[in-house]
Length: 307
Ligand code: CP
Image 1 (cartoon, rainbow, N blue to C red):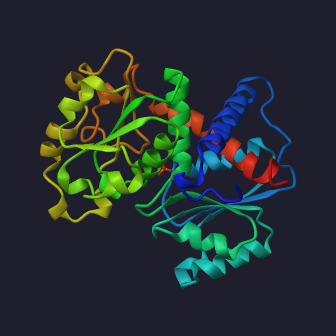
Image 2 (image 1 turned 30 degrees about the horizontal axis):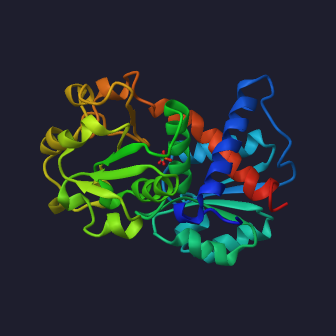
């Protein structure tokens, strides 16, 4: 593939190739070899129109570990504040020789448009409420590393599905890889037609307590207050009471089940500190795995099949 814009871009073979390559990258990173020469002479631009901690830093770390040159572009402090369009910004980056553009943008679909304007590869690092495919890949990697497989897993994705690009990309990718996804949350935060529209076989439940005893993975989503009007949302205390993962709820999970969260977390709302910091939590591992997965994505887009 040339671009990674959506979880739907990945068939099972391609997704598995990325996860297997990421496992090799992790092996390298764990040894004395800190850097590979694979992308020497290539330029990766991180083009971020929205805030990020994990994604931006891990793409930068991934590109540097593959010896690429990295240009970090943040809309704040750039000519975007003077009204420069995404297209003109993209053409400027193109003129500087970007081989790959990693883009985060508040508008759903922005990476797809960008892919029409630049010659290099485009990686969607989160577009509005639409998709975040590398997050889904690192989540799948983490599940496979912890539980040994993806096919047949039962995964509950819990919370603010309506605004979650993480949920959309996870439903698409996990379905492709044979896992069963149940979306859980208040009816106001689960789009009516999302399950069937994204992937047939995806279930919806409004009752977290019913779902927990039967899952292998519970993935808590951040409540995105910045994207919602108050009318969508019950009180924070009411939300936590019905849909927050706390200690008593965690103890209803099967013994082997893991707890995930893409970050950043609202501790005390969708997840308590006891759960986030427990041995079942993979939240820190997800961040570590994100570097290996993004190394694999950049390697396969720039240094592997398309070379
Ligand atoms: N998970 C995630 O996308 O985090 P950031 O917003 O910090 O990149």
